[in-house]
Image (tube, rainbow, N blue to C red):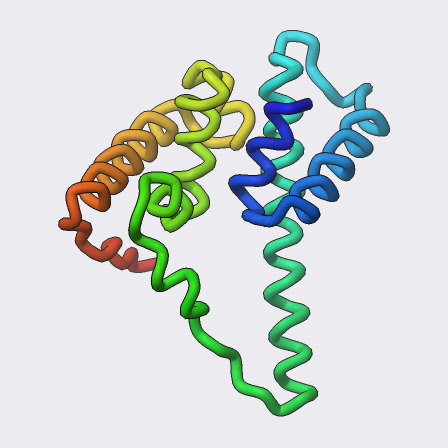
Length: 157
């Protein structure tokens, strides 16, 4: 459970939200334990549930803020000043990485899951895990050296 709490804290950046996320993850794991395949790692399965719960919550939050802004007539604000000012130490730089990169780095480097277990936890191909991990490490290194380039934009068809 400490591993789940640490992962949730890095995703949410809020201790109370992290506790709620871990609790909902464990509740879902207990209520859906029959769906777990015995050949899959329990740890990877729990990380997978936690990550999906986080992504679902973020999507719900964005929809809620958009509806609230529509009805109140307020315009959406951009990134907060606090998030733009973070750049001093390694942990602050790590927190600025995209969620996908943070998740991969946390699972592989901090939680010591294998690439295969991380792929199962995030429900992505093994090759994607390796390429995201490489890009995340490179981006973090560039940020530590003070020469980070903006993330490239992707064209969606």
